[in-house]
Length: 243
Image (cartoon, rainbow, N blue to C red; front, top):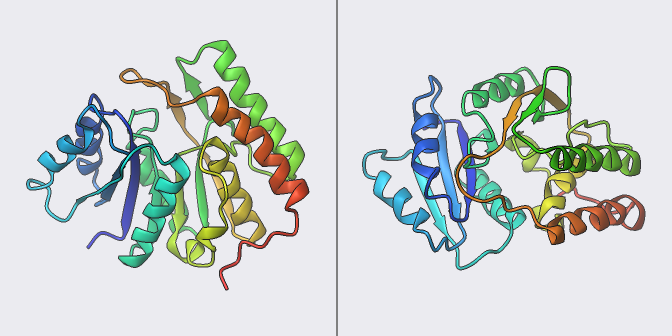
């Protein structure tokens, strides 16, 4: 059995899902993949099911009824990983904005002793390709805002390409994670910081999607703005430790 599980939430990713799975399975290291599909009307889940017989014990699929939010998808994936004995758990997008080759780099960094390894756009060597200026300014501004409000020394707190050690996730009360949209990524890193976990960032090149549509909306961004204040100021004494 592989020691690593890559969690990929999907909604209408038929153009990308088969290609990204093949790219992951072509890597030198053995990664298993859990696809969590929120009722994609474009048939994403059916394409995953089509690939499962030729990739036994490597692809797993959780089908959910409707769009339940990125955060709830990842939390379900974390629980699945813990229930099935994986040592390393990865978050990754389906649209190739995250390079599958970098999974190995994240894994190797975690093996050195980090509890959380972030594929970062904003550390030295990291970069973003094909984003318009307004999207770039919004993302960088959000990262700066989070660092100022939370005093969290993570340069890319909204990053969605992350490796968590299962030993760190086991100490986290998953039910304590409140946000399900853009703010989920921030809260997970904030929770890990409060639990005293070692967080490391390594540079990646983030490439904007070619196929499919972005899931970012004004509502998701608004949740993040409010969520950061709630995490740091209003819920400052909140504990994330699993009892």
